[in-house]
Image 1: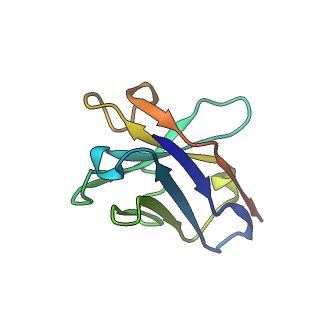
Image 2: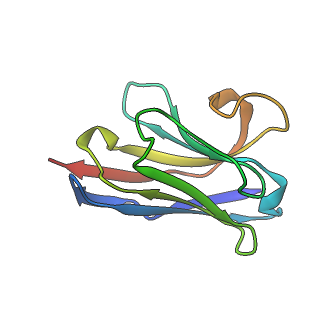
Length: 123
């Protein structure tokens, strides 16, 4: 499966962005999906995950109540709605498909990755 992340950009603190992750080559409903983010010199960290048909989701504490993950299997696309953005949310954001087993929040349990989209939040 190939993943294409988009929707990043420059936004002021308190603003919103919606990231998209478009999949091709395989049916998206075959996978649990996750969003991760990475800043220079730091490990790629888990942001949010969603089950195959959207009935369950999980969030990092740092984004809970501000970010919402969703998916449209009909459109083969996943989304990350980011509200109340903070400068510390600045990072490259990646979407990924999870392997059949393992933890939702563990980077190594994800198999296919998109190329990343830059989010910059100014103060």
